[in-house]
Image 1 (cartoon, rainbow, N blue to C red):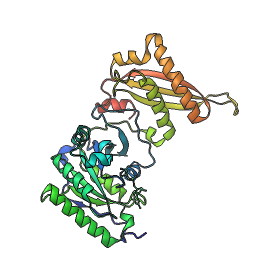
Image 2 (cartoon, protein in one colour; image 1 turned 30 degrees about the horizontal axis):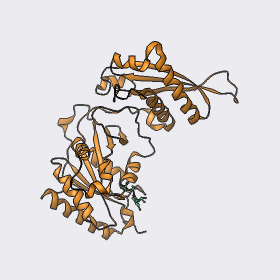
Image 3 (cartoon, rainbow, N blue to C red; image 1 turned 45 degrees about the vertical axis):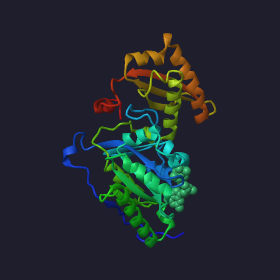
Length: 332
Ligand SMILES: Nc1nc2c(ncn2[C@@H]2O[C@H](COP(=O)(O)OP(=O)(O)OP(=O)(O)O)[C@@H](O)[C@H]2O)c(=O)[nH]1
């Protein structure tokens, strides 16, 4: 396998520098949605995983702004990049079909920037051109061309591919071409953070859209939150669409227990936006919440391999998703 020689130099071609002092509205914080598109095997999933890193995507909260599956979230001090899925665009049949289906068009219209993945080691083909044309048709949306698998070619071949990708951009977008062009290797980490930087550069000024906190650093806590969320939404998904946040407050060993008979206290808050939603979660006389606890507990005990005592609290935090003050209050 050959590699570009200047591995440590970050480089990308950019025409825009979107951030300005004017969008300081949220203390300089930027957040938004992005989607990686490209034909099958272009390296989208591998790049998503590399961008998100070891951090498990926190799916225990879903802002109403998107109805699409979250693939992962890049958390930064000053930004949040939420990578969503386009089910249709992952499928060749849709790609080669006559037009993008509405779902895909919706997703593309909804995101703040599109990452168009083209592998460095394959000539631009009809599939790529088709997608390029569809993306161009979406209209005024920053499209970042990402040349993936940069590690598979030498520097000259990479340069040639970058030029070919730039030419494709001018073909479909007119003289302006792509908003940016970035080569990357997801497998060895080359320029992965640059891809994040460039996409984040296109995110609007916004408060964080998702809770961050330690949860994302602790796969176990995330999975616990997810198990509880699943149990809490069981059967009431329509009534509680995206307004439920689950926060694992504490996981502590119960004192006075012997090593061969441990018990963990797991304290969890469930945040909803309205009292009516709280009532749904709790159920008549607390019956539903007990059921939620029982169902989630089994999964958590299997996950942790130990018995737990699950302490669930339901709280109302009005518009917690949109209100930066609430997020702070909730410890996010
Ligand atoms: N050498 C190298 N291989 C890569 C890189 N990224 C992805 N691959 C490989 O390329 C293949 C396809 O990668 P995926 O990430 O699954 O591609 P995808 O675009 O998500 O594919 P679909 O799910 O079919 O749309 C896999 O075998 C990966 O291991 C890279 O940066 N370098």
